[in-house]
Image (cartoon, rainbow, N blue to C red; front, top):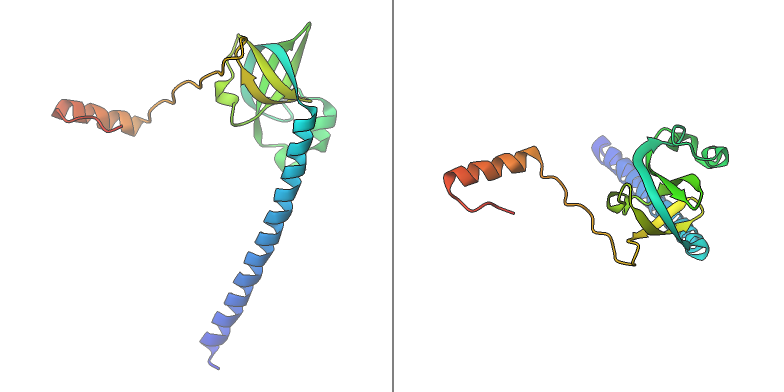
Length: 158
């Protein structure tokens, strides 16, 4: 066998082993996420709260309980997560929000939220109406293209 075929064979074997490893790690992570989702579903409760503020903050700076900070992996402590400061009853709490609904959470409004521990999973208006996310801003490039098309008299692309 030539050297080139041996090198290609070794690279192929390494790639196959890497793909198999990623496949099994992905399955394991998927099972773990399903178990966590079941726990969240089992502990959820509906609470009326007044949203005071919302930000994306580092776990250390968010003001979360020390037990939560200690339980997070060290690599994730520097990453930012969506944090909501809300008044629940007479006390002000710092809660972690689901990334999917963070943009829909209205500031300085009273909402009914589904909470599991310190994790907000769902937000609805006071009368059970779903809250609509604000429209996303168009990028600079898209606005510039639309202005150029308006000047040229063409229909804007959506």
